[in-house]
Length: 150
Length: 147
Image 1: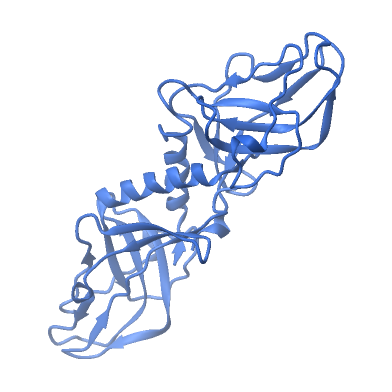
Image 2: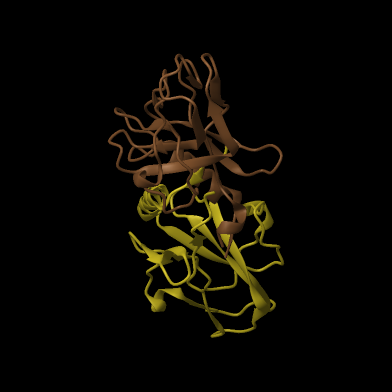
């Protein structure tokens, strides 16, 4: 059958408010960087990633409760965007311990560290080897594809 | 940055959708005027059948089964509705034949239009006793419906 936009509206609203994954009331998921290569896919598990550990690195907790949802004005695709915490999705190198270190991408994982919700591979590895270097992700977005529902 | 989601995230989302639709149930209507099934189709594009004896099919409570179709990499939301409840027939003299071009599904509570489908060819009902079985279909979600 042919879905209407209403189906995708509901999907984005439900995902943004899913208390079992992206929107718990406490112990929210965390954004982490991976210093090991990986292939983003729906089967990713925590062991697929090697968490970064350069000086100054720390996983960033997401905000609790419902996240943002909306529409991409260019494609009409429905989106869920994680709310941006104070300080943003910003990782800063503050020392030379465990450097140089290559960062391959980022992943979103539950607070317990047992379930990966999503990941993104950078266009190329980013080398951290100098104090004050920054990795700043602009947004954490989940995107629905119209072609995937029929 | 668009993240590639995992199956765990998708399964949780599908469960939430299933739960919402279970609570609402659904209503299926035949459509008597031509229409084009597309994302932007709304109820304004739909003209329900209205021959004598026609009634929309209202689902039973908790009509959906959610299952993972591993063969086709799909999440399936399948309506579980008795076949006998899906038959409608002309019950009286009708002024003119009606052509059924397809059908549509709506949320049983909000009446939001969820999905549509056209028949391969229009089905014509002409006189008392002419019947039509409302198809029982819903949506399939390929596992990449969420990037």
